[in-house]
Length: 407
Image 1: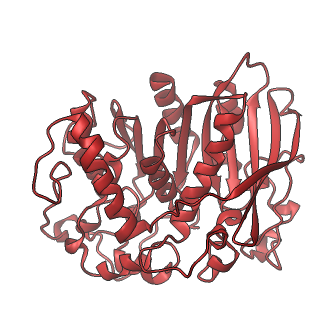
Image 2 (image 1 turned 180 degrees about the horizontal axis):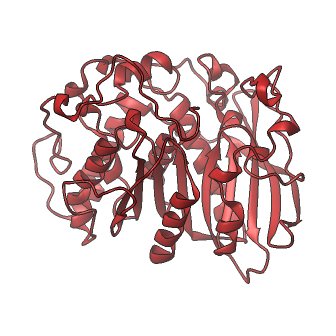
């Protein structure tokens, strides 16, 4: 993870809009057979499944369709945050292929709610205990990246990082607006390292991974859907109003989860960049080759065939965003986060617009991005926050207003 507020400009990459190559985006409404899609029903029955298959086979990897046994353990619930919330902690235990894995879920629910509430669901980077200083949050028991400056040694979390990421979660603000906060540590699902597969949920399924099989981003998305499985059956969450969100690499996972799983009624991408909301063909900031080289475990092996060959992709990321249609979609960028290509993220949202139009939904409108701190759009919305690669109270204020409008 990069430092908050810092502008990341890796040397040797393009940060000049004038040097963006000429490119042609694949028409999101034209199928591989060349037939143009003109109505919402045909999109849903033909083009949407086709695009899901392309993204699975060529980029994120195929998610196994097999079922694994799951049980819920260690449910603990008590008042927290000075009575503002009910803190609920539970463990999802998965068994398959002779392997057991677990995901610890943390929930904060409005204490005074009368009935099921809407929820924001997202993964965290360093453990559930980092999202708030609340001493009642259990520490993760799985691998955590060492950070001696913060007291993380031997790949085990400690109390020193409790609340370290609290500003990125704004728990009191979200709960105070009537929403539940639901999170889990992404390392429980797939440890974020090149050899993380052996300790990940992918081991629950038999067989050696092939070129088009899932990897970390696909596993993180799978984990979000398994959390949704629990929430849909839990009486305290409104199953019709579950939003999925994510920042940076977890924004990529949130988009892929939202594209596949239509139970996520609202999808939010925060600074997701290359492999997330940003158009790959622009060659601005991070590239396909760079992300596949530095993070070889994120995407499928098949995606590496497009290193320095983005123009050969049978899709671009506007098609991923279009797969969320007709559900509400929010894409956010930051002025100093040029590595993530803010303009490319906006253009991706813009070019998803024709699919939303099939459903009579309004997108972001203009092909030109808005000025900083001037949100635009309707069912598809966007803002460019002043600042760096982060998720802040400004972002959360926009997301909460967006959810209020659409939930």
